[in-house]
Length: 68
Image (cartoon, rainbow, N blue to C red):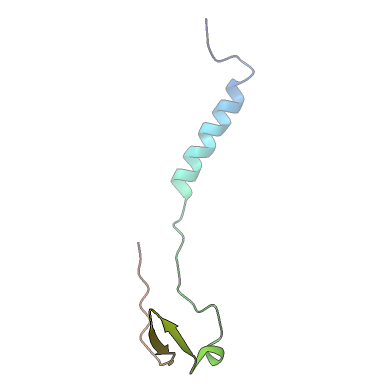
């Protein structure tokens, strides 16, 4: 007795083929760290974290993009 019927074989083949296509053609997502707020809104703001105060200061820096 065959556990896979002739009606379900095309669906199963489609799912397996789709999985193989995703594995072959998937490109990894590149992440880029960005601020959620504009710099002019947080510049000079003071926040308290663990009973210590920090003040935001923006400065130019070299961009480094890490690849995984």
